[in-house]
Image 1 (tube, protein in one colour):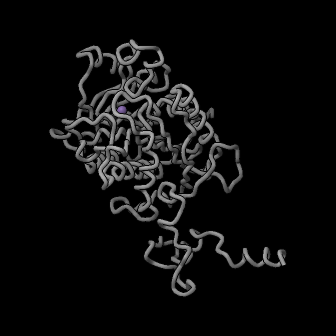
Image 2 (cartoon, rainbow, N blue to C red; image 1 turned 90 degrees about the vertical axis):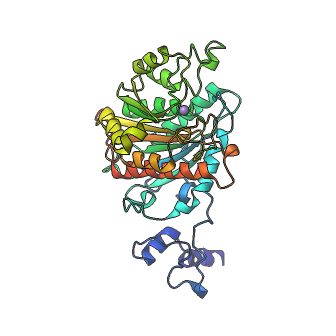
Image 3 (cartoon, rainbow, N blue to C red; image 1 turned 60 degrees about the horizontal axis):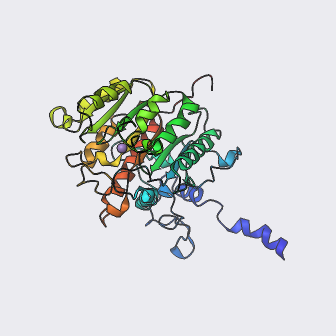
Length: 380
Ligand SMILES: [Mn+2]
């Protein structure tokens, strides 16, 4: 009897919800209110939206932390949660950012952009969610090392479509901004030094000597110093740029001198008022050129009216639309990795303003990655 059942059951049950729905609609995506043709009783229980396990945008989940090179478990772009917030100088809470972003992303399960006609979750790239790196909350150095290992494991698997893009690219959901250092350390191993496009209200190149280092060497590694450290470790190119800066400096001139030394140019928040989004897009594109580029978005680049759910909010920032317009303007650049950090849902509204904005930012990064596949350096 068992043998009979095991033969018949696979023939009856749908093998792939996605495959069935896409086939039923001739490749057109099926929204949750449209049932697949021929469903028994007119109700299609295989409708997946809102009923899955809560991955980002309902993409497939993968255990990316084990070695598995088999074809069906390969991917081109991976979502990774980094719930680390013990490197913040402001309000804690970004450890819950990944869950909040995933929760707010459920309506992204299907849908083409009205601006680009693209759905980055169902384009040529296989996008998966690796869930969260297992980070201890009790030791920052161990947590950041674990995160770096997680990045290396994810980017070490062969890409699903190597003819397009050779190394799996990662979009990290933070987590406070210190998590970007682990990503850059891993990125260096795969791609060599990269330009950083850094959207933030703060410069984050503070010298550990003036931010935390006076307390202890351990305290000197935090979400305000990680870009200084990335420069010291030669992880980044001197063609990097900040956008949206407005938070006060701790040293009137020395901070700016140090920022230039770390490889950065500054676009202040108010430059948008005088020059508009097009000029800001031009400035960023000219700065990074055709270098391999990591794009990091601290959600506090938004004005607190658009992104209140964050640890160190700074009034006077950009709107969500302005940020998305500028990000979309980066299409064609060699984006090899990216993140959205500092989403702290405890300070968000019950309308999830900040988390929803973060989701749109993630979608835009994914669009940039899909629009421009990137080949690894020849010696890799
Ligand atoms: Mn930051």
